[in-house]
Image: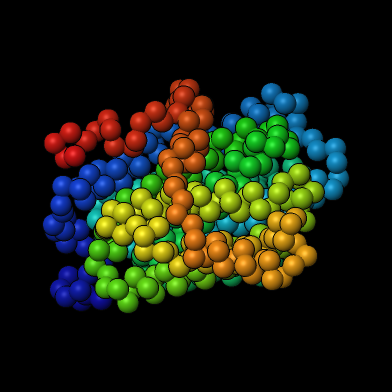
Length: 356
Ligand SMILES: [Fe+2]
Ligand SMILES: [Fe+2]
């Protein structure tokens, strides 16, 4: 703490000091763009929820079992949105470079909207707030409590956001309840932008790490994944009630994570596939044991064999399509504009080709 204007200060006069390569400069331009797009695309949660209720004649789920299952799944989303709000506010405070700080600040604004809209929606389904199960609580606490910025960004922007996107997309495609399905398009547009902060800024933090530190980061990632799997196991009966196959949810989430992590890791010359990302591969292995296929269900030996082969095998591609789907939704913004979705990469409109 400074005394009478002398000594240490929280004002980071060094925020513009960082030396940047052309490639890094391009990533920072994308971070800054996340803030400006967030401002252009901000939507009015109260107005949109009212508009959707009028359009569909209110919120109705006839099947009581489905309604309860939906409430349990989205209660996790509700508290997840609060955690995302707190974590992005932590990042808005702690990130130093201007552009990354702007992106995190814009995310905090979006997450506040997600939280109150989800609360309003769930209240209309007679949801009464209660404490989460142990697994989602532990997962969110890991990311909330860490003081390591790379851990926080990997956990929030690349892991939690991709899990949320997976649930939103799957519920939307299933058409469980029309107001919620349309609402998911709005959430997806925002969350896809938030993943962008992780993809663009994590490489800058990771390039300062030695091998041991990268290893520790991946161990942290594995801990998040273990809790995420446990959470999926707890929710499996609810997913089944809603007509979802937990294995498909898992596979879809894993692909999105591979894509988000792949982009971030490749920026510093690491390949998710080549480096045999222990956490990503381990997830598949554990999943084979927890969520066996029909064929393997009754044989532990077969399940372990499947786990082994998925752990050591696997040379798969991930692709941007898993992600672009979230960026193409049409939404009505608070400025009264209809936005028909991102058609380009976040940077194409603003980065001169010389930076390529
Ligand atoms: Fe959110
Ligand atoms: Fe988000």
